[in-house]
Image 1 (cartoon, helix red, strand yellow):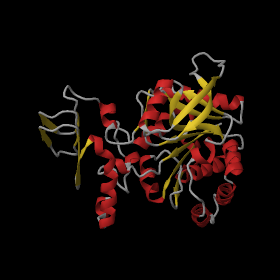
Image 2: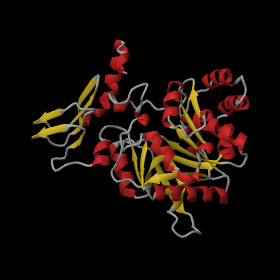
Image 3: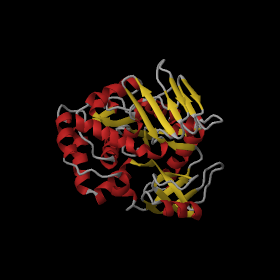
Image 4: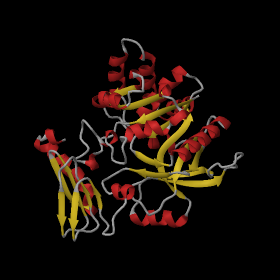
Length: 361
């Protein structure tokens, strides 16, 4: 059977001041009426019911996520005692799923993607699950055809195409290599070559396959995860989870497994995808007016161009004679930044932390 794991532990720093420690971006409705994590869970539809869905997050977000996802069993939302990157979280989910179903197939999804249309996403997941059923040792991921030379994404280099036995399947290829986030010139060469995809960070595999890969490449990590899984459902679980998980050396799933494993297959995503990474994503999601402005909430603009302006509640933002700005209002903090310097939002967050102004974090 197919199970799902949603990774919902990120901090969403680049979406400050809307994203905070207690309510990071995956708990916000940045792309529609649903929050990011609600949309991610709903996207699975009938493919994976709530009873076969796990959410991995940090401890402080367990209660907020439970309120946003009341359809999930309480035990399905696990709060990590500390941050250890994606490989330990994914490995733990696989270990827990395998205890329930030794032949389980697992789809892994971040909680902060915007994907449309949902029907195309579900067909792609079904195709990936069939690829895994055909060859259980396979790992399947999804590549996004690049539309510009992005420096903020990892890339997947495709190799030989796979033959498909089903009408309507998306193109699928053997993976030749994974590439780290490139410099501008390298990203441009990837775009020109035509055989590179953006790495979506969405995976489908047998739970036993990813566990075997971790045991092979990261045996210490696998041993700690095995101890945690063995205690699940007992009165020792909380203490074991805290002790064993904290002892793991953090590592991303790309470094731990993907760059070292064969066979890996990439399916060319037949859906629209956006990794909601920063405020500039709002222009892609919500569109712009004739002046190039994306305005959300009560706003007015005069002689203002190419700006993103987002207000909250009934607070009016009036912009006059500005260009290329990001303006975000929340009840207790307002951000004003140039779009080409939005990465510095992280510096603001760090400065607030250093000053002890935790009420704004």
